[in-house]
Image 1: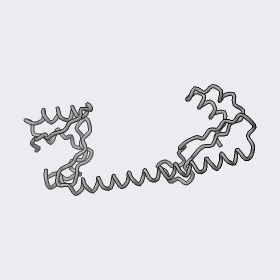
Image 2 (image 1 turned 90 degrees about the vertical axis):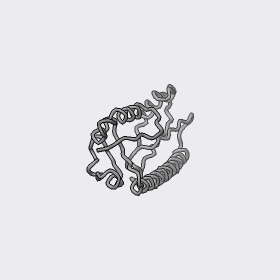
Image 3 (image 1 turned 120 degrees about the vertical axis):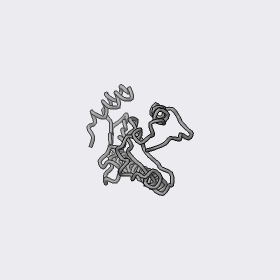
Image 4 (image 1 turned 30 degrees about the vertical axis):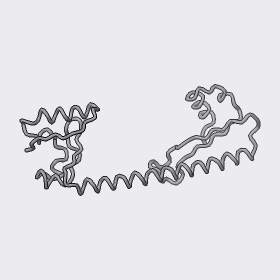
Length: 170
């Protein structure tokens, strides 16, 4: 069970609710991932905090515990659904990239290639492994480096870029 005084202090500070500090009748129940199915097992999902004006009886405590259990199950179900959709989306994207005829690369701000699709072998003559860790600008023909670097710089500064950039590679 969470520390009631810590819960009072947290909510008093976070929400600016001063009277929680002085509320003697407070029930706090954490909504943890009990079975380890969420992304981070044992992760705190929420904290249910109930302050009542009168005495907290056994019936109120049992009702809050049942409500907390139902809320935890609902949160767990929502997290599992979200994880499933994310995994399906990632699998679909990965399949598209792996089977595309176009070369798809992920390039960091410093122009280091962190991913290159398998089509790089057919199209450029470099395997994905050969390109991984290579600086993109090192592959660009000397006469085209300025345009390629300008494009990468603009993209790294958050500009929304749409269009085609043609350049020669070595």
